[in-house]
Length: 73
Image (cartoon, rainbow, N blue to C red; front, side, top):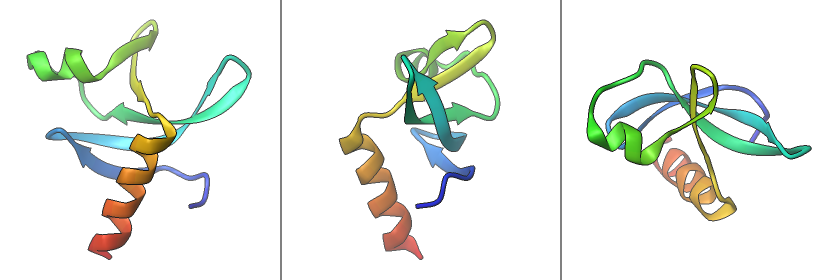
C-alpha cells in the first residue's frame, strides 16, 4: 500500500490511515476525523500530541485493516 492517506471507518469512527513517526520509525496509525465523547473513542485512541488523537497500529492490526480494504474492493 502506498504511503498516502486513506479514509476508513474504525469502531464506528471515520479515520485517516496514514504514517506516524514513533521513536524514529514510521508506523501506520489511524487518526479520527473528529473527536467524540463516546467512551470507545478514549479506549481506542490516545492523545499522541497535544490535540492530536491517534491509534498507532501494530503490524497485525494494520494487516487486518489492509485485508478488509482489499476484500471490499
